[in-house]
Length: 182
Image 1 (cartoon, rainbow, N blue to C red):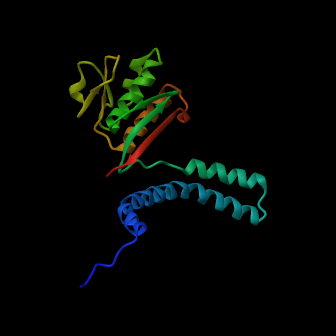
Image 2 (cartoon, one colour; image 1 turned 90 degrees about the vertical axis):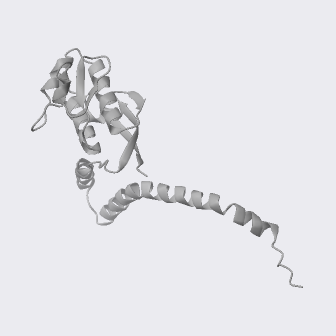
Image 3 (cartoon, one colour; image 1 turned 30 degrees about the vertical axis):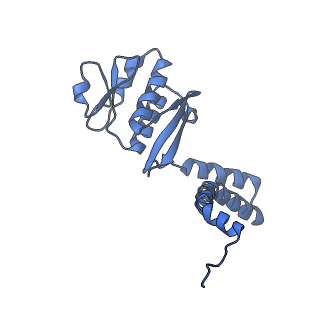
């Protein structure tokens, strides 16, 4: 009689939990990718120190590398936008744009100045009654204004930045948290 070899309980438990370990592994690889950028900056700093670079050169290099950091939101979905100290959950880039602009406009007296922000060939912001000038208009809450939402992810963030600049807000007051698109 050929009896099946008996498996020890630990082997069976490992087989049952294999899926969980793979998930944990995926999470670890995400953390690795997230930390990779910080490690790269750390490694460059250590290399400069080993080459006897002065503190002033190190500070200048750090400042120039920060100014070169441009976020690319292509292929991502926004989940949270933090602007002017307020945090908002969002589901799309159109939501992020609308919420970001609404937050800024809620804080200013001269909301109509936003209509001065135009693209090369079209308006990005219009007053009620002119929303047919936009390809994909969306009403900005608590205003009589509409915003164009037919933009890429990067254009949505740039448009929020242009509005912040128009009303003299610091870009550091804007943070967008994203998820990778599936």
